Image (cartoon, rainbow, N blue to C red; front, top):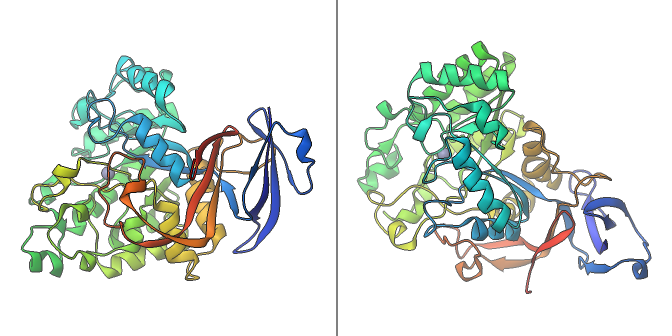
Length: 426
Ligand SMILES: [Zn+2]
């Protein structure tokens, strides 16, 4: 099978692009150039003069299946990812059942094989049933395809458990990926502890709830030599301790979500669940520190934390609503519009943080347009603005405060192994 994507542009450096056609053969990138003879190809797609990037890599999504298929399914969640330009996603294990044995992990991979339209790497938990007590059998889970280990959704509450899990992961050469939240510092909080929480009369989540557990884990990572990856960094103190740890030579990487880069607690207009996520939207100094952290390499990549929920359960007060917002279908578009269009980030940086780096830090063969690489790529319309409309969502969730926002960079086409998995308007 020979496929040609004609009439595209690829990023060369900073914000510069150059005309390019992509020649795909047997699922791999065979050549990038111009003037390829169209008649020789089995199929030809027109990129309409728009931007072609490596397929994006999202190391943090919730696909909710098995267990919570009223929120999302592997089919809907991966279609949403494709619509966002993502070709590889790493799925969190807070499922029902939690895939804490090889047998249960195989059940998840069976659904992935059947239903996923993009590449899905499934995380296994650090502990049985995400309970911070009994460690899982890492080796058995790795043999069944576990991508890495995380209890995302909750923090690991005891240092001893984390220490032993890290030692084992280091031995197995796998990353330990952490949602950090010390529950003894939670005090029933539902949004960032700041003036806005006071104004809305809601209990606050302190910054130290996150940052103190990161500080603990960084020292444990140093002692064990594990690759420690911090999920959705949200506070300025977290950025500071990760920066210091990197300087000290500790093997730590970190991600930040588009919503924490764009929104702050002051933007929350009312006590409504669509604005509730964990970690919460923080203050303006935190957002500045996150941006600075990305720019100086303290934070390695952007990940969505795509967290779909049912409409009813999210349409409640902060006190009742579950945490999380959807992000797969808007991530690149929001980051492009708010940071590239405004000159704060270059296109090259954004491609680096959303494709190149997330693949590189986990050693994935993804996130690149190199000759011979899998033909995972996406085409975006960066010329025209559109409005985020929940009617267009392929995710089962519509819980995001970004509905109605004007964006550029709508995804026109997405290819996985050279196969078209998203085509706007088709
Ligand atoms: Zn999390």
